[in-house]
Length: 333
Image (cartoon, rainbow, N blue to C red):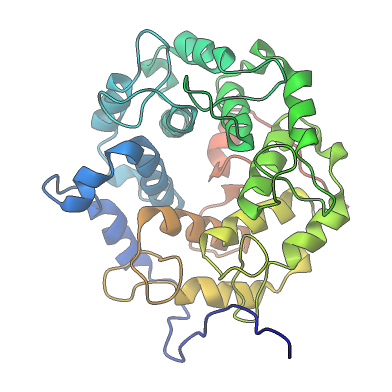
């Protein structure tokens, strides 16, 4: 007898429209109480958490409701004067993940001059390895996520010329698998989140020609389950964040129409918390800014009119990318 597919069942009373006002309130208030247990336990991702929440608010046209000067000052104080990198929180070691998040926020606010830009460039360049890969920080972990973080940061700063671009592309290409997907390193399992990272990297580098376009698009389409939700790997439950990782990848491949958009939209809307606002990973779970951003970003790719247009490469509002005159590659028929 065949093993049942792992999935979730959507309730009949699940929300079917976007709870705009509730999401705005949820995102505005999240993390303001420094006495909360959650606040103290999330120091290690503070800057990235700010990127998730602030970008979500921008997609909802609510950037004017945030204290921009205070945010810019905080980011500036998180930059390490020695290495040039930016940490997750005051007093934390710098890391590429948080350096990119900081640069994305400042680019959105048109405030990149608030930090030591040359220091950031120096930090990113120093993390590239002889094989073209990047470590996330000085401790040496290599992952294709960091390849995306490196080139996205440098492209936003208009300094892609600072790294060994050919070596960086060769490393990412070496992480491509027989199924068209990508893993964290050579011979690692394909994963939808890492597929996005590698396609985003190749989009910025204008090298999407190296992908197995339709083989990969088919693998991505197989991530959709009967509930309409998407998972990251075979035999995993759906998670609303994969709505972004998979949809953005299919958009870059020019194959967004290969999945059921209506079924996916139904799943995403069912992940809303009708009491507090925000999106959770799955219906009935606790909402957070991470899943809220990627749910809203996915709805933007699906054409939700209440949400601003998102750029599929940078996960930033398209108007910001246009203002910066960036043109990441997207494959089209």
